[in-house]
Structure formats: C-alpha cells, structure tokens
Length: 616
Image 1: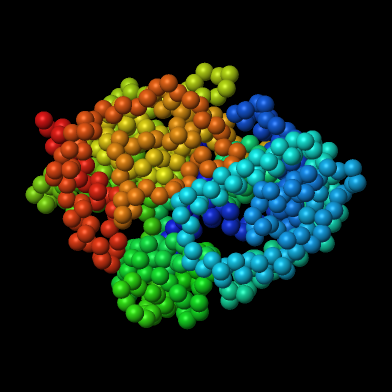
Image 2: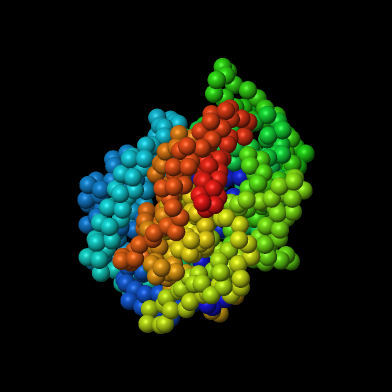
C-alpha cells in the first residue's frame, strides 16, 4: 500500500469546543496571512491534474466549467448568481417563495447567451433574513422536515444540472465569465452586506487581517478552481498550504483559551451547552449540561450563528465572561461569571471507566501524524499498557477495551492500517484500494496483534473514512464488537500533493476507492454496527447527515457479499436484557452537571455481555 495515500472527510459538526473550530470550519474560515498568488495558470494546472490523477477519466468538462463559473461569481464580495435562463423562468416550481432570492436585476454578457447573471437585491434580502429569524426563533425541524428539505434541494440541483446541460455551457463561456469579472472587478468589490460580512452589527470587531484583506482576481481564480473540483465530488479541493499546516497542527494535541464547553444550536435555534468539559472553568463555575445561553456579557445572542457566539465567549486567559443562562426547572435567568483559562485538547485520550474500572477506554479523534511525538499506533499501544498497569494498581485487571471512534472524520490511510494492525492477527487483510484500470493494492497486518483483550468499537454517523477502515476490518475478522450507529459512508481516497508550479497551494484530489476485507466498498452505505445503540437520552435514532446526503458524491457500488457477525448477537442481547444496568444508571444520573455519555453507558452492558458469553 502506498504511504502517500490520504483519506479525508469533510464532515461539518454541529458542536464546537469553545475557542476551537472543527477542522472543516477552520479550513473554510481561515484567512490567509500571505498574499493569494493563485493565477489563471494555476487554474489550468488544476484542470490538467484532474485529467491525470482523478479516479474517473470521463469527467464532464462542460459541467466542471459551469461550476467553475458559478463559484467565481459567488466568490465576489458582491456575489452574483449564474443560472440557466430556462431555470430562472421556472424557479418558482422548485423553490419555496420565502427562500427565493429577491432580484435587483438580471443581465446577459452577450445577447445570444442561454444563461443569465442575477444581481440580488441585498437590502431586501437582509430584511427578509431578519424577518424570517424573528418568526422562526428556536424552531427545531423534525427528522422528516430535514429529510424533505434535503430531498427538495437535491431535486432543485438536479433540475439546474439538466438545464445547464441544455445550455451546452463550455470553456468558451467560462472564459467569458472570467473576462467579465476581470473587467468589472471594481464594480463588485464592495461587500453586498458589509455588516453581515464583518459582523459589525453584532459588536464583534473584524481582525486587522480581515480589515486589510482586499479581494483580487486571484481570489476569483481560486474560487473557479474549487468550483471545477466540486463538480467531481465533495472531497476534492485546492487550498493554501499554510491553512492545511495550521489545521493539521490544531488537530494534533493543542490548547486554546476559553471556558471549555461544547455548544450546539445557533441561528434559528437556542444555543445549548451540550456539556462542560471535565475540570474546565465552565464546569467549575457551575455551568450544566442543557443550559441555554441567552446572552454573553449582558448582550443578547438571539439569532446569532454558533461561530459568532463562540467568538463572543472565548478570550484571553484570566479574563472574565458572563453567561446569562436559562435552566430547565428554574424560574428566571441566571448570570454565571466565568474566568477564562487555557483548555488542552488531546487527539488521543485514555482512562479506566469510573462506571466499571475493569474496562479501559481509548478515544481517538483523528488519524493525524503528530509532530515531535511517537506515531499514533505507538501511543495507543502505550495507552493499553498504562491502562493495564493502572488496573493492576487497583488490585484488579482489565477485562475489556472500548475503542471510541465516534466523531472521528478520518485522516491518513497508512495510520488506519497501522492502528488496525494492533488488534488483528498477522497476515489478515485490512483494506484494499482500487484505481480504475490498475491492479488493487492490498494492505495486510504485518505484526502479531498487540493485545488479546476483548474489544468493543464505538462508531456513529460522524465516524468516516479512516475510522471506517479500522471498524470494518475489526468487524470482518471478528476481533471486536461494533456498537453504535451506521457510519458516514466515505470510501474514497484523496491524493494530497503540492500544486504544480505554485508550492504555496495544495491540491487534494480523489484518485481511488477503498474496499473492506470482504471486498465491499462502504461508499454511501457505511459500516453497520453489530448492535445499534443510541447516543440520545430517549434512545432514538434521529436523522444524521451522511455521505448519501452530499451533492455529487461518488455512487454506491452494489455488492453481493454480506456481513455476518462473528459474535452470538442474540446471546449478547439476551444477557443485557437480563443483567443490564444502563437504564437504571441513566435515570439516576439524569440531572448530573455533566450529561452522561448515553452510548458509552449503554455500551458497558454489551461489553460485559460479550465477556460473559465468550466464557461459555
């Protein structure tokens, strides 16, 4: 297996740890500290790289140039929309009236064009946005409503795609759009909604870097390149090397200054404290799971997006922030002053579970290569030794390991192989990658498994790519019991390489698929756990956003093979039904300051069941 292969998943998480954005959000929001040098020649270099490296050699060039043109116009500080004229005339059929963009004017570059440029009425758009927020404040959509919105959006996009095919948009048209932008750049350089763009109306000062940043034609070229790549699949893109390196550094063990709490919501929904972190300033100040934040430093956060709330709350160590919270079961609101501190985040954590000190718990948040530290697989091996030693000090021994891959979006392919190697016997297949018209490359376990301890792997809808490789291999060989919910379903491999002739940028491009040891690709379908366990308080399985919901994803490849668990699942379930204690435990801890980890607590019953049924 080639060591320079990469797997990466662009999953956008709803929860943030205060002061630290998720990887995808950092990558998207990162403001370059160097001048953008991306040129039209670099755009052409991207096109040539697609022809050379992309997994599908029959890409739709017209579609790619269409998306390149669309992205170019949307990248302007005063964004313009590009639409097929035939779709614009019929858009009321496919868009809700309240969601349709108010139009200031439409125009063509040349009279014969079958497409139009749309200049929105941004003043009216801002008024509509505020009205909509005030009407829908704190409204939470049901699973069915979310699914219907996604399906309707897919229908709208498929109609637009079909309309674009009718226009026969080509490279000649793309060149015309680029020429238009170059000639009219000064006209569209002022932000259409300056207050919204710089967050001035929220009382948040833009950084000096943001103030100085001036949109140039290079930004348009970069947007065009990402538009071209987006027509292929959701995981190919081009970005500043500096942004990648900083993001990778922050995914590794890192620290930030804030209060240490996980939030969700924002926008039209309440901002909720999902959990204060162990030992954090938020926890010590009395913040509880389920608290609703109403104001920060006495200023309302109603209708603010989550990232803006985070910016208001985080700050320098030793400074104070006051959260006004609403708490279930209490009348009135409460002001909680919190002194900010340094919060340390670890990519790999381990501990004995307090609910059962004979069970070791290892949590991995990303498959990354730490700088100036031992490899992740070596760190995991050391964590297992530490857990065994700690259990011994308590006069007992480990009876099982829980390996937590929930919310792990993936990373380096070779790390997934090395980590799986710790748990399965020498010579067993871990994964294979296939490029069209080439023989598959197969990876096998090279060493004797590091531990024989019974193993449980936790996964959820945000476990993707490298996480899915580890989970599927462990499941296939019967080495561990998979618990949780179906994984994300990303089984494509991206090649990461410097952009030819411009080393300041990196190109990430899909060049192969990976297959589990069973010969199945889990693209779209994901990995199904041996036993489904909910992470919700009520035990439900609400809608989760997965690969199948992404636009332009590579399709599923149907397989005749099926996964049959190597464990006696019925015996395990019967044991839990008779001896399980999770339900009682969770009822007793419903009002804890830190919300119980519902999936983990429920999983402990199945850990014990697996251990006991294996003895028989």
